[in-house]
Length: 419
Ligand code: FES
Ligand SMILES: [Fe+2]
Image (cartoon, rainbow, N blue to C red; front, side, top):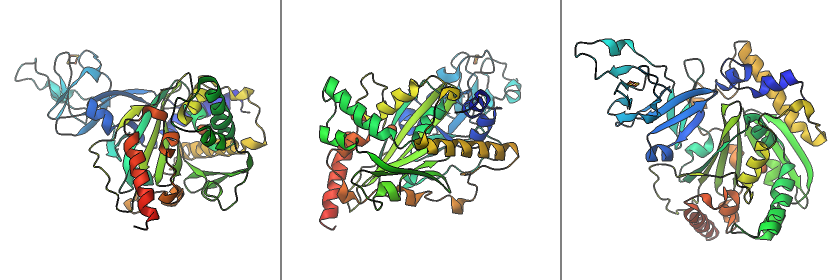
């Protein structure tokens, strides 16, 4: 349970608030290359700041204010230009630094454009995601977490806009027990009521209901490792040995044989979170992987029939209230991970308030290579079970599920043959 003031302090994300200023020290995904392939202009919001993301005709990214300096028109209607974004209303054009470089209806002799500049923010592509940074300059490096940079992978990403505060999404990542109930018993009940809407078997779903014999949450260099020991399992299991690390401040890592997954909960504003489930599948063993000029991106819906793991989590977070009132919660012994995470958030807010640099901010390229590699060992590809990609992803919604399943089956077969 938290006092109302403490709850405000760790949930509010606007710039200038303690949590907003901590989160601003990190790069956040605001789009994917797949989305920009479909439309090179995207209105985005991050930490309460409305912005316009664009890619000009030369492929250069820009992240500038939402509105044109001339008549405050929304630049989401902008037209990509050779070297910037051209406002749809009267053609004023801004480059990626926000500098106005053309005011076509002003006299030829006018120097007006040079005096007009919108705010702009650092923006970079890594791993098919477009990352933005709103914190103090100079910006740190975009962290090269393992799934973003692992070679020989075929990737896709599920995105969802959830109308609730970011923290209830993240607290889920230090709550091992929920898997047994939400992804086990509720899923079983959804099948009982609605039948099968997904490929899969009741046996696979019932495996999720195995009882947690023991759980643990421990700090590690990048955040918190969450461990679980399930009925019939042993302490040698990957679930216990490796667990599912929370990557501070707003990501969690998961995986399976040949699968490297990172989930990011992007704080759009106090009551909106953009959820990203990013998966890199690596068949290995000489299996050819198709080239991906951009990352396939699809909406994972918050379905009224929560028939896949992502929807089960999202509807629960959404319906905990827009901003959960933690002054009215009753925490038990199994909620130790939440307390540890909240303490870590408090500690790191304090670091920033005292003028320091929080954890997981990287400035040395030598330290920013394949980060967290060890945390993503979820067993050899030969342990892949057919159909697992359907259960592990955001249901039937990905356009590339058959490709992924095929790659993993090929990888498992090649591994068994010792290739
Ligand atoms: S409002 Fe943008 S150019 Fe006039
Ligand atoms: Fe979950």
